[in-house]
Image (cartoon, rainbow, N blue to C red; front, side, top):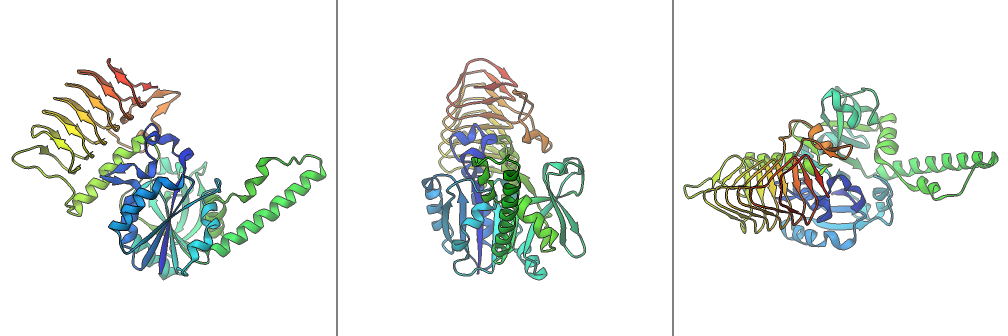
Length: 423
């Protein structure tokens, strides 16, 4: 029997995802027609002998209940549970804190996934390699450009034995082009290893405390509680690699981080393209009576799209949205209850819930060509060329052009805006 844990973080973690996370927690934001976390659950549901998925974070308990209730209906062979951390315990702290509940039923293997990633999720292949090599854990890695490797946790891998020989979180100098994807699988003995790491850290902390006290420099402040925090990357993975207990599995499919709000658009495109490759029935198709559909497009059944509209590629249109005559939408996410009026254009953009775009209005961002385009959407408080984002309940008047801007919720825009952050 196998289990999975998804680390969903909390409200203070998704600040780069604003203004979208002001309305909805990042894990529940829709990309490819479904919440970010749904794609992970869908992939986990196809893992052999996986029985339970546990979400760990520090959101309020009620946040995920409606979503998990739907998951019970859609994935009847799985059980779901949300466990709330009493405080921010670090990327591995909550995992270790709830070890008794995770180990209930004696699972053989335990998957761990970060929620802020978009991936093809070859989880059965990952599990097969993990069981074949028999090490304590396996980290899924992907090949990244050498110039951007310093932005990730990097793994030095022996390509013959698949052993992770060294792990460094965001190294200052180049060590490897193999980056952690935020997907792992561990043997159940991982908790014994983590306990030893905690004991060693506690002993080092007590020694440092005694040494500082001897020199009269020790102060009992809240910072002393840092000994209870456990970081997966720096504390656990590095130690596992040093003890030769960590394997590496290379993901050859797609992978992207979903850190900033702008990163939702390329993630949306990747998931829609995957759905097209899988011949998913959820995707819209062109018909003689219209609208004109190009490429991979998701349209919610309750949305209304005029037959003369041109939609796609890589577009998601969500519940109760209304798209008027002659509208052009490309490479964008249109959220619930949006109304886009006649002949408007939405290109490389996210249009927030309950927003309105007037006749001949234009909301346009810049096409994402690399990771840098989405990881930093502002520089020194100025909007850089990237995805255009409208928060909840933004009204763009007729014939107004909003380009490369971020607009916070509840704004009326009567004039053109270019490269601005509109508070």
